[in-house]
Length: 257
Figure 1: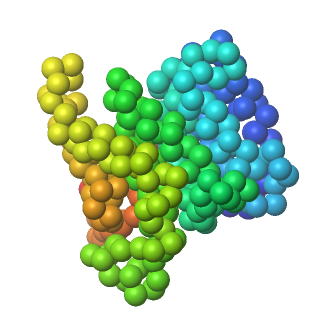
Figure 2: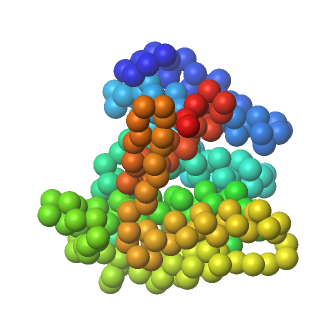
């Protein structure tokens, strides 16, 4: 198991997709198979795989599974959230333009993330906390990619000035939708309903405040990972998404201080 191992990807693609597409299986089993498929492509895959067997095909699969219904069946929120997490992970392997470039008058080059925005906005209104979190993280990464498209080297070096030109939502087809998303993210960052436990409310507020800093204020996230003898600071959603996905897969095997 390691990089540039398309043979492993080709060997596992079929069996894992078969499990994911088996609507009769429980959501947890299908979620585990989808996570495994995404991780295999993330670690082992290259851009030499045939169309339909590559990471782009898995992105498309994740988009379909994250919808409210798939293959004639209602999709469990657990599986939908997993699909968005897997989509976010694999998106980190593509250029920013592939995710967030284009507009409605350029359908051929329309970013994969832009096509997903309406669905993500719907997910933010879900009653399921995990699905809301996954959607918020996904939007944060798409916004970060969009932001990066208009940054020159000087702007990129100054993290306190996140102004952008070509990466703006202003005047685009997505401006109104993104304004609605920003409003919803802000609401979730202060939500205090009785339907959630105190712990869940605290966790959601903290998580969505981080999303809001990026989506509303154009600020970079920050997460510090400490271990004995050192630490590393992550300053982008792409880095944090990769860390969290690996952390979820390794569980107790991911040891930090």
